[in-house]
Image (cartoon, rainbow, N blue to C red; front, side, top):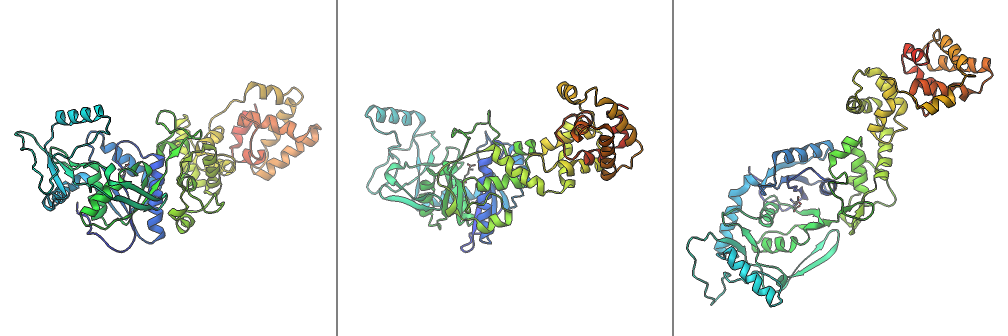
Amino acid sequence: MSVQAAVSSGVRTRFAPSPTGFLHIGGARTALFSYAYARHHGGKFILRVEDTDLERSTPASVKAIFDAMEWLDLEYDEGPFFQMQRMERYKEVLAGMLEAGTAYYCYCSKEELETMRAEQEARGEKPRYDRRWRPEAGKVLPAVPAGVEPVIRFKTPLTGVVGWDDMVKGRIEFSNEELDDLIIARPDGTPTYNFCVVVDDWDMGITQVIRGDDHVNNTPRQINILLALNAPLPQYGHVPMILREDGQKMSKRFDAVSVMQYQEMGILPEALLNYLARLGWGHGDDELFTRAQFIEWFDTRNVSGSPSRFDLQKLKWVNAHYMKQSEASRLAALALPFLSAAGVTDVDAARLESAVALYKDRAETVKDLAEAVKFFFVPVAAPAELVTQHVTEAVQPWLGALAEKLSVTDWSKEAIAATMKAVVGESGLKFPQVAMPVRALVCGTTQTPSIDAVLAALPKELVLQRLGS
Ligand code: GLU
């Protein structure tokens, strides 16, 4: 696949996931920041799949990443580009560097490197490649051994400092002396990770590299290679990690780290985006904002330089806000798979929409919403203690009377309310003494929205049946 030539003007950001699993929430947030930066500046957002790790990259992961990006509606302008399809280009750049003398062949065998390491450790030195194959003026290189496929190493500057003004963390510097002559191509000629990133960022004209701060140590190496290639340097912004609420690292085993797990929990994509945007970035005290506002306000200067902590309760609070704002028809469609997963398959669409309209302001997730409206389709038995508490002997005859009256009541909220009031009046009971048992018997719980509205959203026969007549 060809890539546009380097563009020297206009913002171009990228998201460059490695397809070795699902899209995790940290990755999604990085993607969101890159996306927002490009949109804020009217630039381009590029998707690049870093799939050169053949052992760990899978087509299923590529699909998982695309699905998650689509679910979050993180639209990209160019790509997806796949590194595996750009091998020829990397080899071309490698050849150019060998020719220019900014890279060199190293014929050290594994055994030699191990001996080198052991000797350095024995001397109490930091293990590092001793540059024995690095060509220098006046230096005599070892004889090329037979039958060894060499690696290619980058000729890292021996002195000086490599640094950048990080868009998130401020000035970061490394001394070149700390950096090895890193391997940029393996014995089989395939380029290594840092090298591919450099060539891609260059070819794709990336102007701002916004990525996780686990890459901070790669950046000085990448800058040195870009300098050796006389390529323009992008700006770099390293976004801190997302930690668990207790400050520990999140783990696949115990935490929902995959974006799609949030869909499975019944979180709306716009809620997850709003929450992730706010996590580690801020615009005053604003907690709830639209995508357009986020794009308008986003600036890497307001991204926090320290790790943020994931707070599921807050995410649910944000989600509840977006559920209130959503159309009942949309939430009904989203609730359907949750209902069928709970074994509720015979679902009348109109009834579901009325039920959702009644319940959407009360649920924190679509999953909870589905659970709450289940009784509209299947009988849900109230816990025994609720029945004992509310369906008392004193009340029972009046429930019969209510059912009888309801059987001839017009099936509207107002008419149902009038009938209930009439029975309350005749019985001398208090309103809750009638409403609570009705709730328990019909809905399986006493926590419901206005009971007349709930009954009106159910078929009359079903209500009468559950009232026991
Ligand atoms: N592929 C890298 C990752 O998934 C990102 C590299 C980059 O953004 O430079 O961690």
